[in-house]
Image 1 (cartoon, one colour):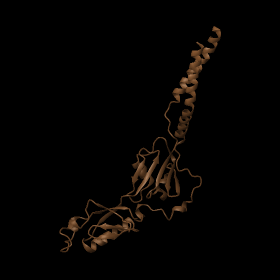
Image 2 (image 1 turned 180 degrees about the vertical axis):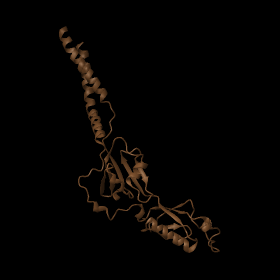
Image 3 (image 1 turned 30 degrees about the vertical axis):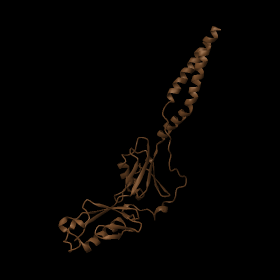
Image 4 (image 1 turned 90 degrees about the vertical axis):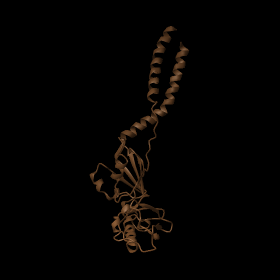
Length: 265
């Protein structure tokens, strides 16, 4: 009877050791493998030709927010007519800039001008229009800077700082925003970067130098940028996912072997 115990216990201890090691290896934390915006049918490139609008040609809409700044030197200001204001500074827009929200009627309440319609104009057109208004009434050779401060893009996936980023500069490209986000992580697939623009999906391969000059990578309001994982990262996550499934089984086997071993002693 003693010989039976000696023949049985060594393999049991061996498998017990294997199970303990396996349970330890499978204790890695679980991280979901996120594959977003997958699409089998790519929409033709001509789809978004009419709706593509970057900051330079974006038409101002209700609820947009404009920042208007007077950039001319104060010596170019002319004296205001009596009764218009007690001081030039009360009428002229601040040199530090003021923000104006476009109302539902497409107008902004412009300092010293009342309500002025800007909806439908581009940023440059709005700037020229505002300069003309002030030239005709208050200023001489008015110079203004107009920015749309509510436009944004969203970056998701394998970048160092995902999130929302303001889109304030004309012709902002994908590579510019990726730089603002801290660049790609070591898990990123530089050959599979998606720009989601409405119903349009654009795949960008950063290994191709022509990407830097591709007009499709000029970003527009509400673009979503998704940086996919590379194959190595995906395989690693699959192993983690498998270990999460196997871990409870290993623990049960481990417990059963311990009970069996104690019962045989």
